Image (cartoon, rainbow, N blue to C red; front, side):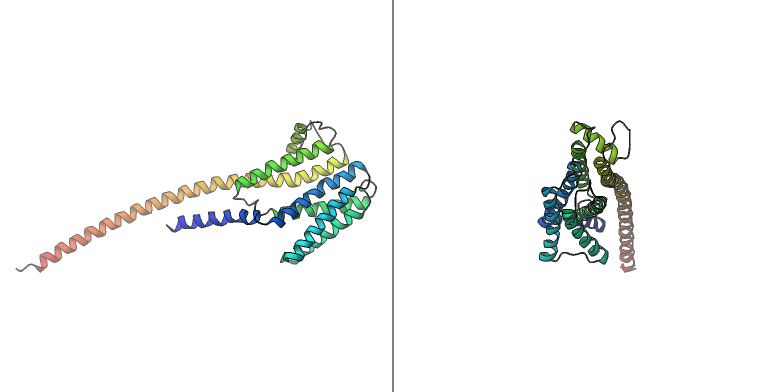
Length: 260
């Protein structure tokens, strides 16, 4: 049936997108280097000193993006995306050479803007895996984000001495519940909470939208099934009526052909 072929084509198309992403190792390498800049940002805020490890993470992320563009000529078609990519590269390089964020307001502001651009670029790299109709991928991403954010709070927030406390603070922050039993108390954890809200709330919204879309699609499929069933029944009835009419015409023709 045409409807079944259309549904099969849509499933095959949606299933091929994550496979294409998984077969792109450069994408995952850049994603890993960008994720490494997150602890690098908070490492300098917590220690208040220059960190060669943090600088190396920023430089590695910038070089990975430049090499991907240079070797594979992967650059966004729109001018806005090109501007954002090169701005992120410049921000990563500046973040590697500027003084610690705790001693310079300019360095803190630039690193915050760079972190925001990093988050946007990470979401762009994962946009195919975070499609609305890929519920397993969304659930996996939500669990991974919760674990990473919980580990981050466990590391930088003194009021979360255990990983369970960090996970609880990450969940209440991402869900914008705000019970108030555990709250961020240091500048580093407050800045981290901002990004947890932006990332976690977006992931949770996608999961909710995917579940709602699944219920809607199930209702539409049942309606389509009922319509096709009624259509088949009507077509069968028309065939029976045509066959009866044809038999009557044949009988009438035989009677007319008989000699008087």
